[in-house]
Image (tube, rainbow, N blue to C red; front, side):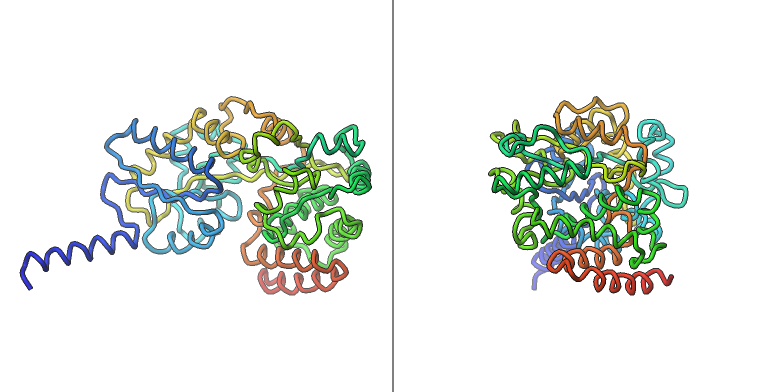
Length: 414
């Protein structure tokens, strides 16, 4: 074999290795982005394009991965040859990797870039052990989306503010031949939204966080009350039929077609509403069940991180400083159907985002990060599996909770 051919084969082999492992040249910034839908991908791309204009010497190599696949692949990236930047979530999800030494400490960036002021409300969720490992981008509100025209048709004159009003609205919708609530239970996290809100409204955020930390037994009567309240909705057939057959994407058309009236979901879905449906969409705060319980909300924070094993940390810090500005925060928020985490960003113009912004800024009972972001992954996975079992047979509450209690004892050794 000639030297020329041998050199060419070696070159191809090395190129192949680089391609498989995500190795990058100096001056190349490798970014892995989780996204849902074309509008989310497009807004991230616009940020990378602008960064490239401001820093022509840095070549951005962005890899876009569907959100569900991303969750599965992230641990592998962080523990082997990591990209230079990943987007992820705050709270326990971030802490899980920070405590394993897989994320770069960004406390210096917080001090240098003035983030302690501009991201004050999300600093706690960005921290582990007194240090910051995340650069917040956006956060979003959770609440009840509803069709104004469908409400009108069923004779519902106002958005329900209390649980009694909510149950009354469901009753009217059912009588009008409309499924009150769309639910995509095949994506188990959509069920976790229901668990979170029923627990936050019945028991409050302090109790909820103790439960998330593994400090409360699942056989506790307060946890059972969450499930018995939920069971009323199921027994009354207020959810669409066979909700476990649909994921979120398949459940949304029930709302778009007016076959269902409401859906509990995060504001991030609003970016994907069809133009014909948008004017008829309303959004309200999850109803108050017990007025004595301080009102808490889910407000999950999205964030950027530098993996500890990143190759090009210098350019990664440069990108974070560029992306964490009021202008970029507002642009990402608009494209992701979220709210800007940057306190100096302009308030969103979108009417649904505006309501979400007000709900979160006015809450007095605390902001939770969401069920599977506030809890260790293993327990969250088991908990959501339990919710699916409960939904398929609500009479099994005690068996489901007993099983979860066994799991809690095993995971938390408590």
